[in-house]
Length: 567
Image (cartoon, rainbow, N blue to C red):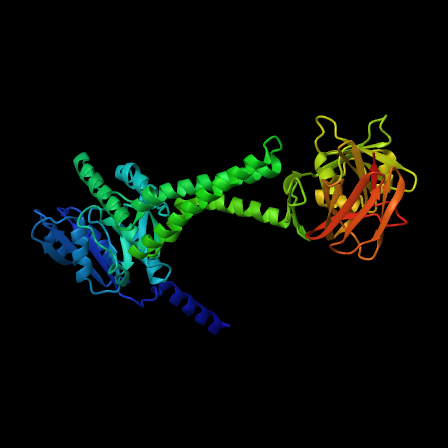
């Protein structure tokens, strides 16, 4: 047991005194201009950090004893004969440094501690990042808040550091070779921007409060000018001015086009008081605008990518133009919704999201409305004194191939008159109680337009045509399965009076009656022409094949007459 505690104590002591793993050497660069009062203290603090191998003070043309104080404190000193600026001082020190990791620390910090230095360098030693920049509490920061942050937010919105001008940095020497050092106060923000655009990993490290000399207003003015010049220069170099100005306009116009497209589609399907044609026109204009400007954006973006480093350009592009991305996403979501609500049955494309359904016929030669907006329809009870009537929207009649004043027979005993819906009830399907029972429907039930053929399957419909004082009634049964249809043209006394279509079965017998009396019957064949007479009247029915389908199954012999003429 004694030996166990001895070994445990030895291990704990070893852990406590162990230094950070030293797999790279560290140099610290201290730019100094007339900092004789503080530079020695800064050097001595940095020397206490165990993993720092080299301290270089760049005496930037000082007129006081800065160089002597730094040498006496144990630093290596490099002197500029004249003041060249902070950026030049950093650049000189970085090029003279012999280590793998380089830290830049100001010479005028009164309360610098080894812990602050370690916090700045340790993330790089541990492989967490390539560059660290510090943030800390201080009383100044006017140039940062009034100049640097607004401009960075405009041109480089992906850069969101609290203190982009902190002045204290550490970095791997190999990544600093990729960065352009400004010669003045713009060096700090230049490093941040270059690292961001080039895709170099950079981390902001909090080192607590620091105390250093407050810059006079004149120096702040100079600093602000140099910071502004650096940010604008980098924005122009990396294509951000073009992105904001030129491409920005194209993106805003693309958003206008996308918005118009969304508005048009929304109008088609959900705004009932706006006509279908207006919605289609708005959508077409929007699509043209959106495609034109999106193509311009893509072309200019490709050109920008060729001219500038890749890095975080994509991330910045996404952040700047997030509204366009959202507009595209909403449009794609809307289109996917419509596609999910689409049905294609034998030449008829039906797009039916709530609350309106777009019906597009592939063959419009046989229909007055090849494209229309229909349904859905809400079931309600018939009016009290209309027990033998079904009130149906005109769009539903179009789908079933009938019109007002036609009739529908649902069983052997009951025939119901078809009537238009009442004012203010454009999509209401009013059904007598017995009809709801036969169709297994309840009040409030919503019926999509494509479901009408299923609901009324097997119903016998009589559809009337009024032509030249003659009523021609065609009779057919609703089928839920669209089938290949044929067209027929009815010619009376050498005058074409009806063009209609429906489903005929080959070799089945169909009858024609006049005033309820059967006057002709024939076996149907494709492309058949049937002629017959009644009194002084000559009839000709010309059947032709079509490429469309229908839910109208014409009645055959033993079911009912196919056509009935009433003079």
